[in-house]
Amino acid sequence: MTPVSVLTGFLGSGKTTLLAAMLRRPEFAGTAVLMNEFGEIGLDHHLIETSEEDLIALTTGCLCCQARGDLTLAVGGLLARRAAGEIAFERIVVETTGMADPGPILQGLMLDKELAGRVRLGRVVATVDAAIGAETLDDRAEARRQATFADRLVVTKADIAPPGAAAALSTRLRQLNPLAGIDVVSFGAADPSLLAPDASPGAAARWKELLDDIGRAEANARQEPGHHHQHGPDGVAAVLVRRDAPVPAAALPLFLEALAETFGPNLLRLKGLAAIAEAPDRPAVLHGVRHVVHPPVWLDRWPDDDRSTRLVLIGENIQPDWPGLLLDLIAEEARLAAD
Image (tube, rainbow, N blue to C red; front, side, top):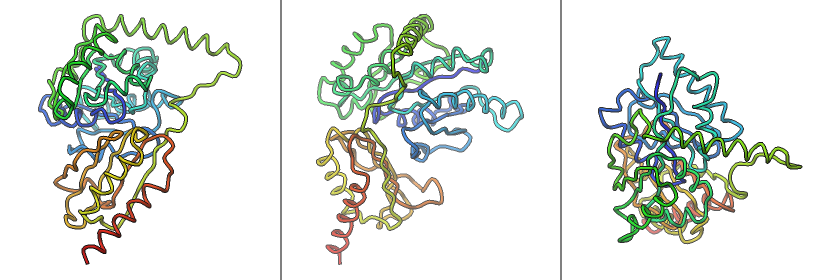
């Protein structure tokens, strides 16, 4: 059976950085990747410098909600293409959206009749941000669920966290999930065994117990009048900023600083590619979580023929037009100052 590992973690916790680092290792040459993103705006596949063979397939929509049948279709599609000789892989990694509850995803992989006997669940890895992970666990039930289901927890961004933060977060995670192994990593440099094809000892029994709890809770909820399934908290939405005109380099740090100051904790995630006027052949990769915005990282080349600036902001109560207007204003000021 083909092993399928699940990589989960809250928005901005470092899933894609970790995945990109793993895919560059020779041990993962035969890996098919399914990437799932919050909302209908997909950018993460452009933020990984890898070959087309590594990044086999994408899926949009929420795998843990009404579209979770897409997981069965996507995995089944990969297996069919391999059987037809179109592609070759040895394992599958599913990267969930940062807002995902991994429980229903595990249900699909472990219990779906279409996949029975064809795939087996490998590792469930959850990333937790050392810098703001404690705050996220306090505020977000999704983050707590992700940590609870993991059989391996990865405390990321230890290089930028305050002294002692990673150790304190590890202690809290141990209390939340005493059976999971915990790794503390910097710059996405992790042990390849994180995404090993075999789950940790005792993980299958723990997952069955958790899924049984979910089944009982869902059965009770269906009996309640007016019950309906809803994913994610009210007010969380993804906003896309796209601009064809390159942005002056001087405008970029001012724009990022203004976003962090304006939205603060409401900015759950910022990610994207920016076209910089002074470096037309190399896009800047932008990442931010809440009030923490990281310095841009430069790709060696554009990932496709689209050389426009594409930024995705995921947050609560963010006015859809405001980030774009802010970028236009700061960019124009920078152009005038340069003339």
